[in-house]
Image 1: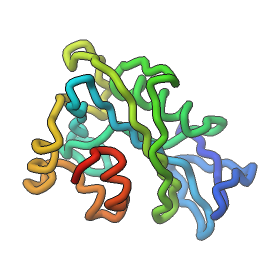
Image 2: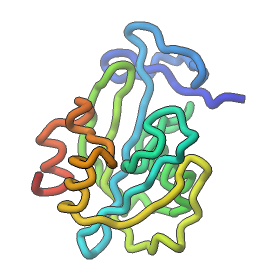
Image 3: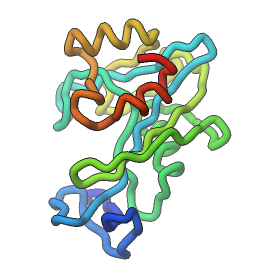
Image 4: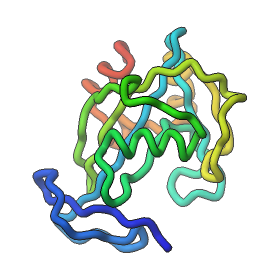
Length: 169
C-alpha cells in the first residue's frame, strides 16, 4: 500500500484530507517534505548517494530527506526519514529548524542535525547506495561537477538558506 500524505492548503494548514503518494496533487494542494543536513563536530557534512533505481535524481548525491506521512509533523518526519534512510537515530535535541520553503506542491522544511556517526555504522535503505562526509569546499566542487543536487539552481533553496546552513557559500 502506498504511503498516505496529509494535504495542506496554501497557508500551510492541514486540510484534513489525505492523498496517496501515487496520486497527483491538485492546484492549491501541498504536502510536507523534509530535508535533513547532518553535520559532525569537524564541520563536515554527511551526504548520501541516491540509488540508481529511484525515480527522482537517481545516482546523485544529496541531503537526507523525504515526504512526511499522514499524522507526522515536520520534526517527526525528519527524525523518521533519517532513521529510515540511514539507520541513524537522531534525537529532537540534535535538530535545528532552518527554514521552510514553498515549491510547486510542497512545503519543504530544512533541518540541521548534529551527529558524529561513522558512515560504516549506518544501515542504508534501498533508496540510498552510499554515504560519506564532505567539507563545504568538496560539496561545492561536487555541485559544480554535477554530482550533487544543486538545490539553489533548482530554486529549492535561496542564498539566505545556504548561508544559514553553511555559514558561507
